[in-house]
Amino acid sequence: MVKVLFVCLGNICRSPMAEAVFQDLLTVKGLDEKFVVDSAGIADYHVGSSPHEGTLTKLKEHGINANGLMARQVTEEDFVHFDYIIAMDDENIKALNQMKGSQSEAEVKKLLDYLPDSSVNNVPDPYFTGDFDETYELVSQACEYLLHDIRSSQDI
Ligand code: 4NP
Image (tube, rainbow, N blue to C red; front, side, top):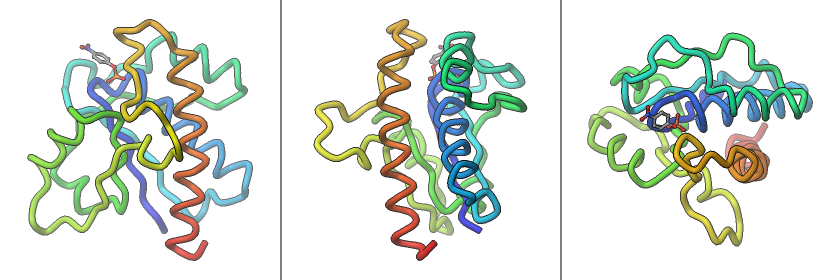
């Protein structure tokens, strides 16, 4: 079982979008049983909330299931439980690296590190840009590459 955690700041815009998109890819490819997917936020601002309306709208437009998504904060346990911790931007990485204990073997990387030839390194935050289309396009493209990368390194 490969465990993947997507992380952003608030866990209401980008990381729940990535979680749902990645989970959808797994379902389409019949890989549900080989993975556990979740998302969490660096901050506790929105703990217990559903995703932002903009994220829900994009997921619905693409026929992607958003049931059960609820914001939570990253915990120290996540660094032991998850194999891959996939962040949306440099600020997330900085915060995650400060939290990461010496026991953790989790791979902590940015989602767009997996997108070849991308001119953008950080997933733009639509909470501030208002542009959920741009964020969705980057997230969905990068999730395909992330899955491909994990499958090759884990032999799945
Ligand atoms: P996210 O976006 O990190 O993609 O979920 C944000 C959501 C809420 C806030 C900041 C970013 N906020 O400051 O409340």
